[in-house]
Length: 236
Image 1 (cartoon, rainbow, N blue to C red):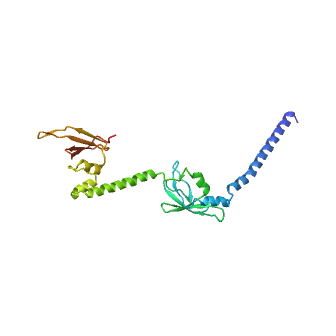
Image 2 (image 1 turned 45 degrees about the vertical axis):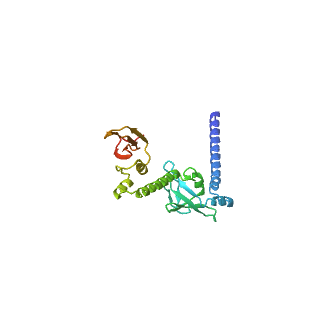
Image 3 (image 1 turned 120 degrees about the vertical axis):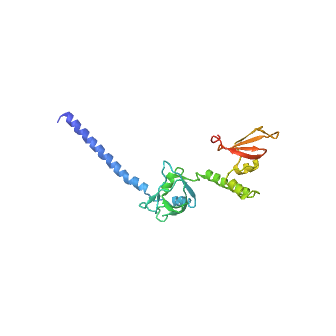
């Protein structure tokens, strides 16, 4: 056998031995990794997980995806994904006896589900939030509803006819409204412009124009609404 063939045979044998060793090492590591991933929680960890019972969280879609919940506390149970912005309360830590915990949750829709603690920890502050992401919008909506209720109550308290009150509630202007009436019914204008106006019976009639965001202009003569002109569009 030549020196070249001996060298080639030795190199091939070394490669096969190295490959076999690599496969053996990988196979020996897989059970260890699997056992670590499926290891049970300690009593202290269970206690820490249970501390979240009673807390409320909110769902936030990221890349159009929300966390996966189970229909039952089992890995082979059916799964579902809640809607974006839906809130849920952790009502129980199930599976404590077997050290295989699941968070039992109840959504504001009334639906119940289960969530693995490790999934919760992966998704917290990403797709699971500790604060309502729509809190500011909801506060504004509540404030707007309260203001609308006050507006309607004020209108109904005026000594107007039923037809005028109905028009005011629907935000329909009626000639003869005072500036105070218009402000209470339609809100503050973006700006007010004043001009000398025209003469009537030898008197100069000052004119006020109230400009609103939707482009409408309320025109007053002697502090009484005369007419409303439609603008070209929304006022910036």
